[in-house]
Image (cartoon, rainbow, N blue to C red; front, side, top):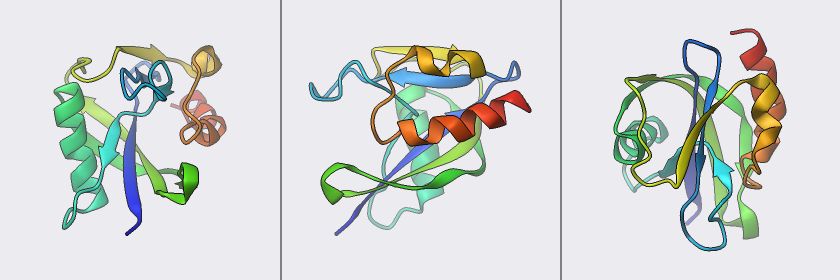
Length: 130
């Protein structure tokens, strides 16, 4: 069975995107990602993403369109799918080491995880037009 991981490129009213620093597992700790997680059996991608943002950030999100194509995960384990989103309230780092709001010029300031990195160029373009 193929794994589907979903992520949210949460953008605020200042045109900044939320980056989340992984606390675990050790091989990913310190890397930055779009918040999200695994889709559970019987769950839609969108429902999983709303649930994961509630669990990881303590906020409800409204989802927009997809950001980029499906991104293959390491070792052929599955795919990452990312949506543009807005948070209803201020996110908290409930499961991450740190959260940062980044504008388009700051996207290269953090080491993005390999699955998230291919989406940064398209995200930069979208943030510049917000």
